[in-house]
Image (tube, rainbow, N blue to C red; front, side, top):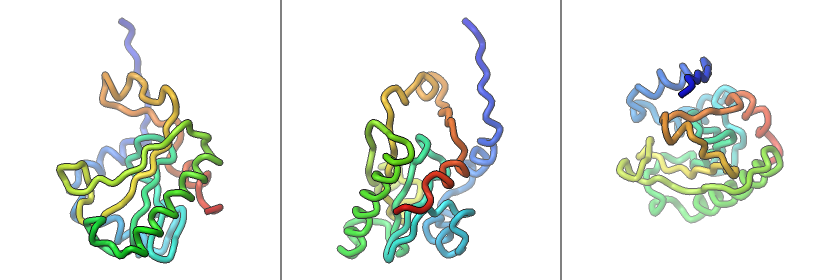
Length: 162
């Protein structure tokens, strides 16, 4: 069997960040408060919610829609906030279609730690573009994802036009 090496040195920062206790600081509160959308990877701000690139994406263009309000359960959100989250998810999907031409999407909430929520105290909606064949062998046999684009490149491609 041949030995393969895939070099992705830019991922080292992600690996180091992943070892921190992710509930120490709420990114969904800190990032919009920082007022630096490019550094925070916020591609769009709405009235009640914002759209941000996932720092640990499943695929290129993996976005999250989050309310500004620090609430952990969707059933506790005001109806107007839920409505804006869905409208922004629609816009995110349209923008992703324009930029990446995906074949489909995964869209959903992970509510609670046991459901896979990394930030269980601040609800957020994942919008993940998908392509036929994007579940290649790497995640299956090596628990590794190969991303063909940096987060900065994704930000440049997705910012604006919401």
